Length: 445
Image (tube, rainbow, N blue to C red; front, side, top):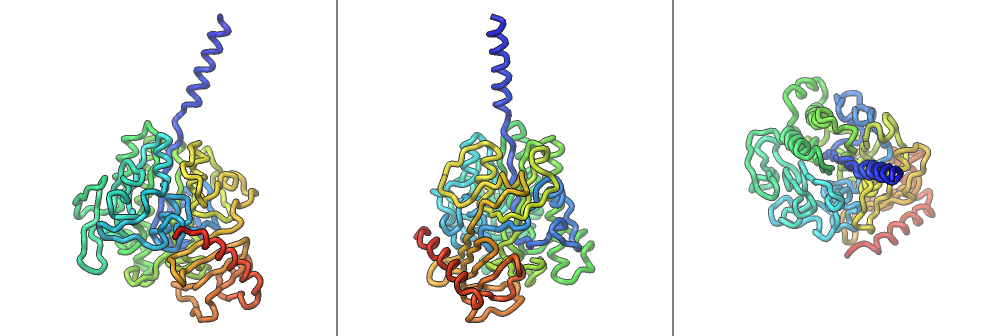
C-alpha cells in the first residue's frame, strides 16, 4: 500500500514537471538594417547596446541569409519556413486596402504555435496582404497591432508614396487613429501590455519593426549624438539607435517580469540596407560585402541574426555555419517541443549548430529568386560557390555588364564578389545553373 502511494506521488511530480509551461518565443525582425550595422558585427560608429546584449546572451551567426533581398518575400520565408517563391510571394505585396498577399492556405509560424497552445501576437509591420483573410488575424495571430503596407510616417501613421496618401494603422483588423504618437514606442508599449496580460501562458510574438526603414525619423537626442557623422549615415544611425532603445524597452519588460530565461528571442534583419531615394540613397552599411536591398549580392541577403535563451543555449557564442531565415520555424519547433503542421518546408533545424560550434550546417544548397517570367533575379549557393542570375548591384560598387548575366563567385576566396569567375570556371557555372534550373522547374505556377 505504502509503495503504491509513493509511486502515485512520484508519478504526480513527474507529470507536473512534464506539464511545465513551454518557453515563450519572440522574433524581432528589423527592416532594411545593414549587414554589419551592429557593434557586435564590427560597427564602430553606432550605439547598439541592447541589440548587442542579445549576442552577449546568445548565439550570433556570421553567414546567415535572409529569404529574399526585399520586404514581403523575406517575411513570407520567415513566417512559412518556405522559399518565398514557393510560398507564392515572389515580390512585394501591395500597400493598398484590398490587395491580397500571402495565401491563406500557407501555414504560418503563428498558426503552428497557436495549434500548440500558444497565444500569438503580431506587432509592427505586416506587408503581406491587405484583405481580412491575408491580414495578421487571418494568418494565425490572436492579436495584431501595426501597419499593413510597406512603410508609414512614424507620427501621422500615413503611407506616403504616390498619391493619394493614406492612413495605415490597425488593431485586430480595425483601423485606429493615434496621430502624434511615435510608432516604434507604440510597438514597445503594445508588446509590454501583451506580455503582461499573457505572462502566465506560453506566447509567441512576431515583433516586426519598421526601423531603420525610411522615413528616417530618429529621436532628437540621437540626431544630436550623431551630428558629426556624414550625411546620410547620421540620419540612419539616429534611427537605428532609436530602434535599439525601443528594443531595450521590450527587454526591460521581460526582465521586470522575470521572463528572460523563459523566453527564446530571435533577432534578424529582413535584408540589407536601402539605397533608395526615400532612404537618402543610403546610410546603412554592408561592410565588406557588395550589394544592398534588392540585390542578390551578399549585401542584399547576408544579415545580422542572433538567437538568445539564457541558461538554455550558449551565450556569447559565434557560429560561422551557413544558415537561413526559413530555418527558424523548424528550429523553434524543436526547441519548444511543438509539432510542425506543414512538413513541406525548406527550412532546416539549426539546433545542433546552435548548441555545437563544430556541427555542420544542415544546408548543402540554398536558393533565392525574386520575380517570375523570363528574367527573374536568382541565386544559388553550394558550399563556397555562389552563382547569381541577372545580377543587380544596388550598392553601385561596380557596373554590371552584359557579360555578367551569370555571375560566379567563391565566397571563401573573395567575399566582396567584385570579380566574376564564370569565364574561368565554366563547369562550375553550369553545375550551379543546373541546380537552379532543376529547382525552378518545381516551383508553383
